[in-house]
Amino acid sequence: MNSGILPFVIGWCRRHIEATSLILLSISIGAVWMLAELTDEVVEGSTRDLDRDILLLLRTPGDLSDPIGPWWLEEMGRDITALGGVAVLTITTLIVSLFFLLLRRWSSALYMMITVGGGILISSFAKDFFGRPRPDLVPHESIVHTASFPSGHSMMAAIVYLTLGVLIARVQPKFILKLYVMIVASVLTLCVGISRIYMGVHWPTDVAAGWLAGGAWAMICLIVARILAQRGHIEEEVVEEAG
Image 1 (cartoon, one colour):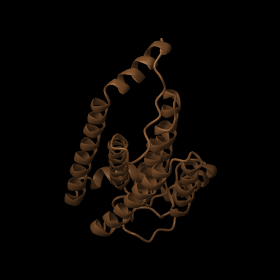
Image 2: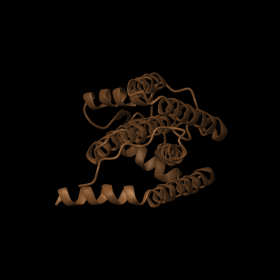
Image 3: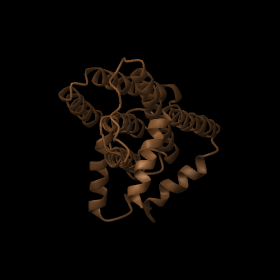
Image 4: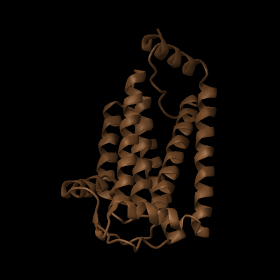
């Protein structure tokens, strides 16, 4: 069954490049719309009870200083949350840049650096603009200095991992490899966001906003990459031959 479905999907995408771009654009617009609605609810304070309930759900009843689960789960939370830190994301971006350079895809490497850098700048601006206080219900399990909304770790993880994911997927010939790359990027993004809530340093809506913003940015970057490739400014996407 799979042997029949995959060639059909690959062939359809190749024959309807404008349609697939339109689908991606629709997803991006939907994410931006959801982000705007969520931001409005947060500013009005409508999400306060939901944020509070979810945050307390991840703490041991009677001891808010203790996250639920064994000690090693808390240690894993610290390790995973570091995947959304500036150092790890910078190293990851440099490694993927070298990957593109080794493939002699110079324009793609430059485009990747611009899109990732631009996304991170937007993330920093957004935190300064909203200035939402950090959660004060539970002790923080990680050192924090900046504002809370949107979650910087979640947004930057989404921007970096998802943007790198869609650009790496463009140079993979097989559909299954493209899918694998995007699944890995998505799982990393989700894990970083969940860890920020578990560590008590972000409200759940902070993380949701970071995911939506980063996801929309990655989709927009993919659409722009397709447009630039059609105009010959960056390398074409590698696509597996159907059948």
